[in-house]
Length: 233
Image 1 (cartoon, rainbow, N blue to C red):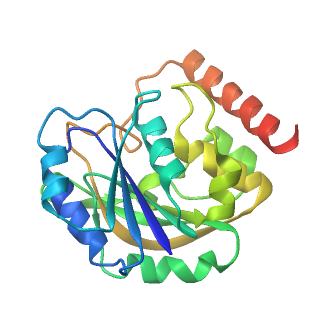
Image 2 (cartoon, rainbow, N blue to C red):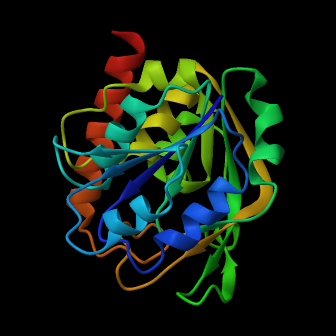
């Protein structure tokens, strides 16, 4: 059974297109878990209009923000194989079938993605901006994990929950670094989604950061401490 975990927040403009691209790849027994972070637009109405029993909606009543919204979706996922999804991307046909064979073992598998504008016009690929290099220290220094391209097994889900109680550690960094330490990471050098960038994105991985050097140092130090505590304490 496959669980797709999607975090929504005021996604009325693009979420219908993304849900359609996901449902087209799911079987009847699979599920699309949507955790909503308090949308006040038509997001919930659009989701309900699908009337699809594979869609299961939950409200995020914990820490707000996309990381803990994803955590809430993950908590409610019951599948053997977990896929993350952003609300405004579009999955390319065959994404699940291309990733699923690697999930027979307990691995984190993630792929490249086409970066597009809001009209899905391709601007490049994530790998044009940053390439994956295996290893904990390398990825602590320069993260490449992109949550919307990731999939993993239930064992990894159970191991990585709960997320640290902070707004500063991102879900994909947390899961990726723990997998570098305790599991196996597989990178697929193929773009399997259209990763839409626009003014309303809740994350900004492919945009230039305006955070200070001190903030980035503190962020990496916090990640270092929390992941090592989880893995070895």
